[in-house]
Image (cartoon, rainbow, N blue to C red; front, side, top):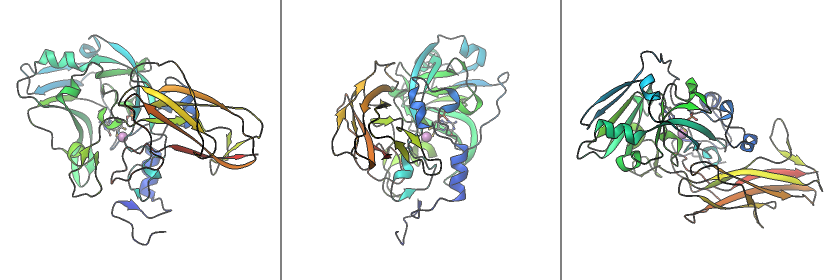
Length: 362
Ligand SMILES: Nc1nc2c(c(=O)[nH]1)N[C@H]1C(S)=C(S)[C@@H](COP(=O)(O)O)O[C@H]1N2
Ligand SMILES: [Mo]
């Protein structure tokens, strides 16, 4: 155990009541739900920085303003009357894997479950912006939610900006349905942003205002939060697209208290999981039953869509009794791979190290 712990990190082996409160509010997706192409709504992970706002859809409006020629004010019925598309999109919180870092940055203590795939229905943002008429000199688009809180000693409304060229991509949606039903309150009712390929914080919930900016946004969630850095004084680089990752449904049955898995020798296991990347399609997935010493190539399922995770499977028959670790890792079309051990950063972002599941073969 270390005697001194860097600021903002937890002492080894400790979890505070504050972290337990965060973990209880913001639940993960149980990894057995990797079995579904589209995550059932109640099993999708959830992350809300402040409180879930109560929204009256009758009085709610979406404002489009800033560096535009014709500011818009749109009701929910007007948004829903626009061209609609439905797409499966995989979300992953940028802090997924944070609690596996050493030392552990203090924030939402995710292990590996901050992921899910929704079938999102919405209207393309680009068409709405072109209706408003983007003024010359625009550089970013700012998205404002209805939720307020304090973070890093700064009172704020949840706001995130996107570079203009990213905001104008075809796949970016203003979504009002998840899995064929109106957004539930906790997932952003009545309207949220969906930016396929980017980490979760980009998908602003309870959206009420879209502001075209002619200079970069300097607010907390872009300038201080969600930056890759080693030190608080460093400017760092923005967290953006999801790093390549494969996860599996943990095999066998779990122990209630420790989650250790048990499988029986000689009994064939169908190992199944999902893999995704914000940088391109999944090229291959590999599985290891001996802690990463040797790897076998998994079969890939058909792609469900360009922005959804891809299913994979492989058969494994445990032969030697005793303790082992099963692992999986993916490679994407950009040639990106997963590290065996995670590189550390202050916010605990983008930890896509190989998943390791301790298993006892009986
Ligand atoms: N308005 C608002 N939008 C938000 C957040 C928030 O706290 N407030 N959390 C973000 C983060 S960090 C993530 S990972 C995703 C989680 O989306 P979900 O809760 O629908 O899974 O929402 C993003 N959008
Ligand atoms: Mo997140």
